[in-house]
Amino acid sequence: MVGAEVIGIDLGGTAIKLGRFTVDGSCLKSLTVATPQPATPEAVIVTMVDAIAQLDPLNQAIAIGVGTPGPADATRRIAKLAINLPGWIDVPLAQALEAKIGKLTILDNDANCAGLGEAWLGTGRHFQNFILLTLGTGVGGAIFIDGKLFTGHYGAAGELGLITFNPDGHVCKSGNKGSLEQQVSITAIRRRTGKDPSELGVLAQAGDNDALIFWQEYGRDLGIGLTSLIYVLTPQAIVIGGGVSASAKFFLPAAKAEIEKRVLPTSRLDLQILAAELGNAAGMLGAAKLAWQMVEREGGEGRQGGQGGQER
Image 1 (cartoon, one colour):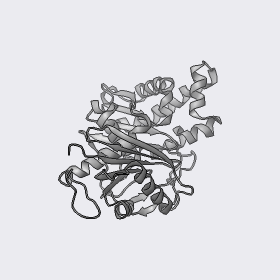
Image 2: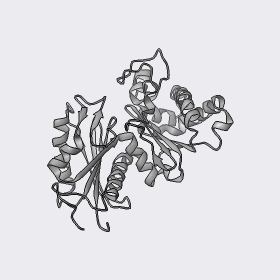
Image 3: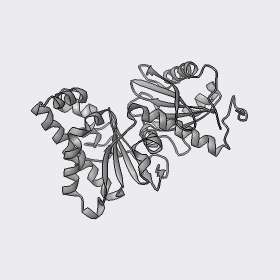
Image 4: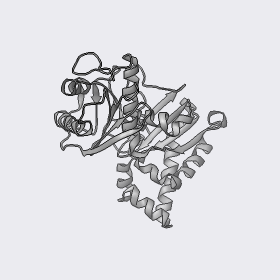
């Protein structure tokens, strides 16, 4: 597969990030386009097809990986649900892109893709057993056990942000009430403070007492949420990604202190809690890794135009 390329796509509610990657994870070209509004499946697919044509005008990529904001089915071909996108229920996204682009396509949850990216070339590459928590507009998660992404019986495992934090808390789009997402996401931070995390980070850096107190409280809440995950999974590491992680130095100490109070030493032995390394590139990089894994299973070749793979 020397010289071969794949496309990794990170589908978000406001932006779609795309990149062309080699087998060693080098990004040859990247592109970000606005997610159409409303982000119906039909509109998103048209936007993706146009963006792929811009990203790969010579049609060199042999496969496509896509991270979607919700679970895929066990075959990784159908976007089962995207609670932040309208009309996204059982969308055959892989089939639709294959029909229009002619390249084998695979899907997974966007947080799983971010986890794959971190496991490949980021913080997670140092660990066989770790969990990733993405603190963004929502809160996603990925679980790695013995070096492999754990997706569960039907492909939907790892929705770490949807565990219950407060049974009397705010209603979550998932149907849960008081989920961890409703406590520590960017949306929750705005609701709690009237400010964006980036603004609170700047204030904390300048020594603003209210901002510093907020981040301590935020870290405490995050630590409480992580406690149950640690008891169940006893990971080597917890990797914190997403936009909120830019302020990790202000809240991770409080999260660690809360975990030390709540988790038995036997369940947190040598546990490390670390910020993710790859930033906003993790999702499309992990989607590319997903595509490379698929290519390897297919015998080292992608598929063009519904026919056998082209040699490169």
